[in-house]
Length: 73
Image (cartoon, rainbow, N blue to C red):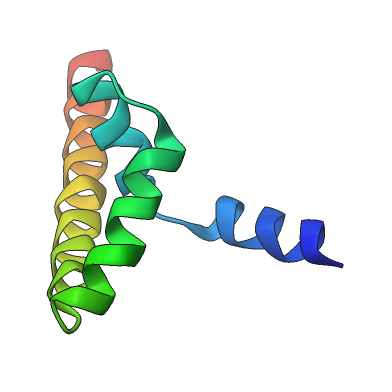
């Protein structure tokens, strides 16, 4: 049951922690733990940062897809 919940959130996540871990050469679990612990300490500010980062990453992927489609013509 627990593994199904973890798998659900990993599939539906925005990839913010994965992106940050790759850019900073760190473990993904450390980045996730940082967001969890800091959200308790900073009263939700990291959650706002996570949502904004997810929107920016989604916009980046959208722009890259459009750019590739334009150059394929």
